[in-house]
Image (tube, rainbow, N blue to C red; front, side, top):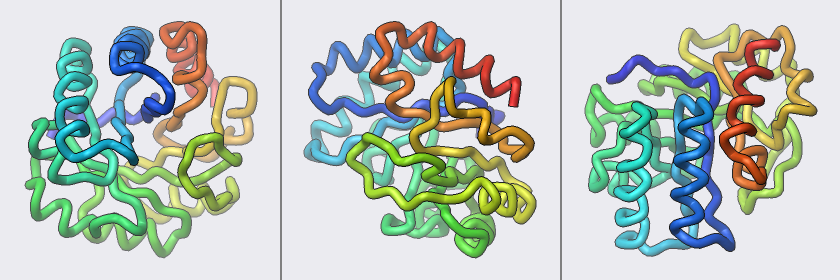
Length: 208
């Protein structure tokens, strides 16, 4: 497995945009300093998802940014992505690990200390914890307190990232939480300048 840097974790949302627009945003974000990129598609067919994953992978590889596929181990394997991210309703971490092997990155979404400890035990490399703020993505969100986030950081020895509605203006709530990075969707996807947005978000994280 590559050295894992979760400082600025970008999760895509292709809703309402063309494939080329998505690839442009991915390229700009990677150039701007994204350290990990997750392709998240809820509505594409398996074939469409694989084709898009391969196209995105060709961009991320240029910048040595690991590509993580949301939810779908089959798509991750087909596209030879660097890893997969699973939620609480998706395939268990231990099953994803068994299928993906030891060299791939496995991430998990957790909202409680108990879930975090279980994901770590099953072999997760990093955790996404949240939502810290309500989000505008199509994902069902349950708000997680910053105190719970801190408890999770203390409970597991793997990287913990905060996720959920985060941007440059509201990330200060995470100060002192000892997280390894932040996950963003809209802060880059909806920016007029994804390159600059990524730069500013990364700088913001270093201030936390």
